[in-house]
Structures are given as C-alpha cells and as structure tokens.
Image (cartoon, rainbow, N blue to C red; front, top):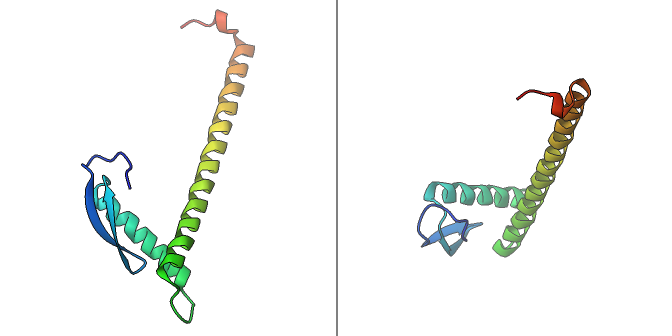
Length: 107
C-alpha cells in the first residue's frame, strides 16, 4: 500500500473488518488510521441488518466496491467541473474579444 507518502515504507498491522492484516505502507500514521476507520465503518454498514456476520473477505469485497464506486463518482464530478470551468473561461474570453480584440487590449 504505497501512495508516495512522506514517511519511509514500513510494515504495519491493522484490523480490517475484524481481520488482522499486515501491510507495507508509506502512508502517515494519522492518515492510515483514518483510512482504516473509514473501511471499518463501511464494513459495519455493509454487515448491518444481517442475522449472521458475513465472512470478512466478503465484507472487504463489498467495501472495495463501494469505495471504488465513490471514487469513480468523484472523478466524474471533477471531470465535469473542469469541463464547465474551461467552457466558462472560453465564453469569458469570447466576450472580451467581442469588446476588444486580443491584439487591441493593453497588458
């Protein structure tokens, strides 16, 4: 688990969905703790309402799918926002050009 963090890669043991997992990571400890908490919260939500707890591997798979879906939605939203900003900037430049052509504007 490497994200080009600021710490040197180290081996850590975390608990994910009730299972101890050993990882090699360079993620800073506070960030790693937050990520583990997020995964465990998702696992708890995925297991809620079930009569018996699902296997940890199934929970982790569901969590991975949920997080991948959320990441994909965020990426699409960011891509849409970038396109809107580019279009708006283009319209502003066109408006400026209609008022004063680029060569006529003073710097």
